[in-house]
Length: 362
Image (cartoon, rainbow, N blue to C red; front, side, top):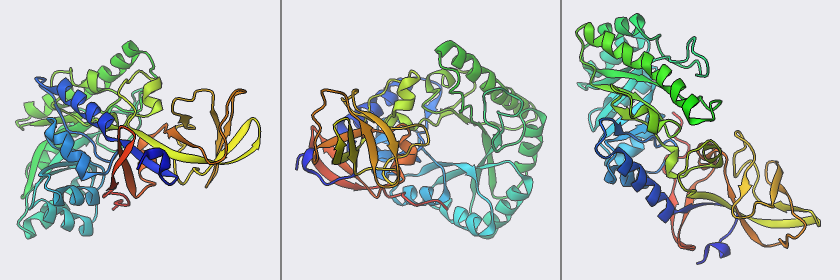
């Protein structure tokens, strides 16, 4: 079936473009001291995660424990959950997961780490941990997120975590994201280096305290080509590069667009306006309104639950029943609205791919 005959709305993945993006990022990291550990919260698909590993990624990053469980069941055996795992119910699942793969989680609280140690000991499991640092505290442009303060607070919790049974202290993690106000490369590079300087300095202090810091994890698509060049950084958690979105493109990241939303015109109430069958339940708008692929003269002017509203240029001949493809401004929050990808190759539908981690929020 040709894509333009497919039912709408639908989440469309151009697999050739995605494969090119995956190869390109893999080639970038070849020979570098820092490794790629892609964040799969973007695509939520073991199929794509395995492609990333085949292209050179050392393992994957997940946002949630339930995502990691799906990925481990697909045969992926090196997983970072870039989050704190809190509560006996989740920690029991984590300890069970750690029996089947190398799993690493974040800690920023000693009470949580002690409970993790207790449950892992009872279940005869071993869990790896990274101490998370809050790089945004008192640093302009960085979100104030989870994590202990850099410097001595990081040393103190790392020292205590390393003493715990059935817990393996593996290193540190910090996130230098939310730097999007720095639109030129030089300003962004300076901000990233300032933020990650705190992470690497903390690594040095922890090592001076007698602990081995094997992993220093950070980064994303936004800063992969800056963070990966900083001495001491060992892995980068880039994810969105697989699909790309218009927000990244506007700010200088130049991977190709692999993900679109296929929709069709259901009404042309006035010559200058069309309404399509894709709204907020189909494509996200948390980073702005979508654009129309290859049709810059067609402007999205609003989304409601079920419909999208578009202003037409004078010469547009779009009519009822015609299909168009929308480019998301944020791929993460668009993917999670759908059950499947319609995978296309050269315009033809190749397969329907389940988004296996969709709804895995626990």
